[in-house]
Length: 339
Image (cartoon, rainbow, N blue to C red; front, side):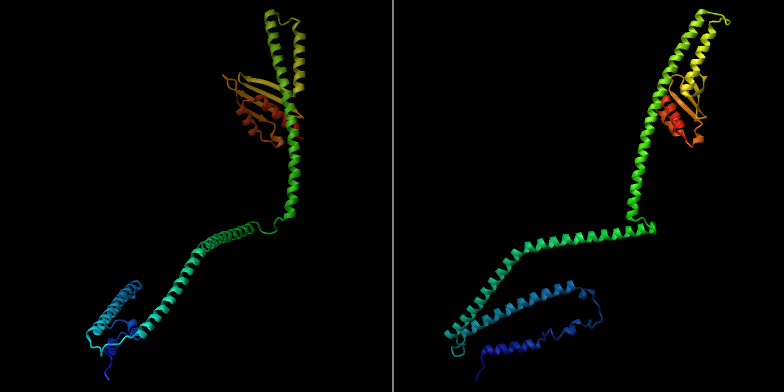
């Protein structure tokens, strides 16, 4: 019995396939083995080059398979046409029905697969925004957690530095609160003292101002008296000058006693030296004015060193504001406030 020509061709193709040695699974060890000529090409080890070669070979094999199926179909078609009816393969209606049923089954499977794929795509479209939103929230939470972790580490490092900088025994919270209460009380007492001192300074400034005005009036009276004496042109032995002189000296002594002035000297046209006696201490104030503008150029204070007071800052501030009366009042207030 002769074999079917199609079967013969299939056997011939199988024989050619086996002789071609295309069993790649069996040749894995040979593929991974180094070249027989001893060359070690780095390009063969590059995955990108291997992937590119694999894609090219896969495309070539697919084309070769398609070409084979095309040639096989053509061969069957030509054989069915030119061969005798006895030798040709007989295709009956039952075969067509069977093939039709197989095609219908495959179409049904394909339709079910397409429906499942469409459902999966719809689920992906629905769930993708939610997944993205959850991903963004998770990413933000991870960033916050990393930031908090870094802050915790920084706080621990700062606490360690503080512990090294301030060894035990450390100030506790109750002790700190007690110290704060004591400081508040102390600040209140100091504030009251400052207010009292300010009031004393204001009163002393008023007294100094009134005393200065009185001195100016006495100077004016003295100038007028001198003018009157010159106008009268009396002799030195005139008895009328003695009562006036005694009255003037008594008034000047009373004024000095009221203002605690011990002595006042006009050293030059622009230099005035005042000496005060306060509680048995002598305070000397030297004022030097500019000749043309009569502004306070410089000043010096002596007698406050015994009280432990440095008057340099006080003197500089009043020189800057050109306040000679304020300087005298401040120095006298410090001397009077001292124990």
